[in-house]
Image 1 (tube, rainbow, N blue to C red):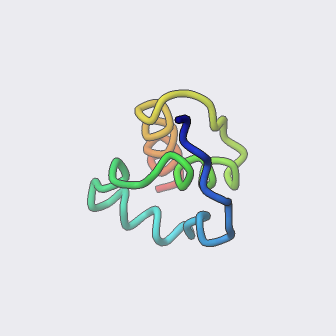
Image 2: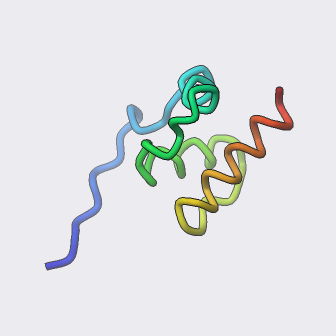
Length: 66
């Protein structure tokens, strides 16, 4: 039986502060794909690819915004 996607809600979109904290603590990999994609979408970044691709994109975003 295929998995059903979880309904999306505004709570899936983390704030910049929450994401920065995960970035600083090196815990971004503990976040779900839905959360990572939601954050990237708010930053006009690509949301395609594997989890490692999304993590690289987010880390790169924080490195350029530091």
